[in-house]
Image (tube, rainbow, N blue to C red; front, side):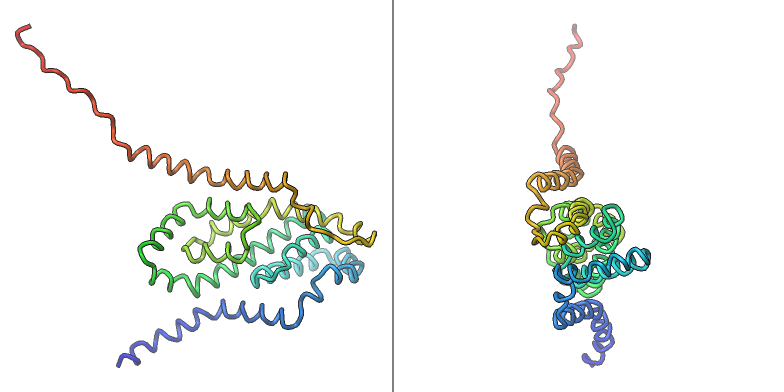
Length: 259
């Protein structure tokens, strides 16, 4: 009787894991077939003329393919986001390249977010203890500011930042908006660096990522990230102020009726 009662839930639980399992399988296949051999600086140097001609000949299909490839790489958490961002600047220029990179990264992050929420969200909610429950409530209350902070500083793994909001029960629309805004500054910096990639390849020099995020640029990103937490700080100060007891008033002496 017990096994018969639990069987209807088992297929649903299995289907819940299918999106995340599909993403993991695709990532394994990409690695197994050696994606790094055709998504590398050497491959770009070898095929750059053909790529530039394809973009010039069919700019809209080329942009669509680039956005789809970037979204797929983001969803699969392949370590080629920096390379693709530079390629976006090299092929499409600073403005269009930034737009395509941000769009592709946001779409890929949404795919991973939905897959993780489907597979892990409800199960984690059912098993959440008091500490995790309070953490989820706190994240939901200021989810947009917290995610914006994590996105603005490009030192946190993108894969982890995609998963945490899904596990914390964040809604999709604020997630997408915070992701789009949060990745824009760093993406624009890397795309602009990619605009000059052609001259580096012409000179036969080795391209280095070390000089892209200078200390000044990193300080600016940290400043923006701290500003994103300002609403959280204001909310905490307001709650702290409302929780303080009102100052007690001195007792009023009784009036003397004989005066």
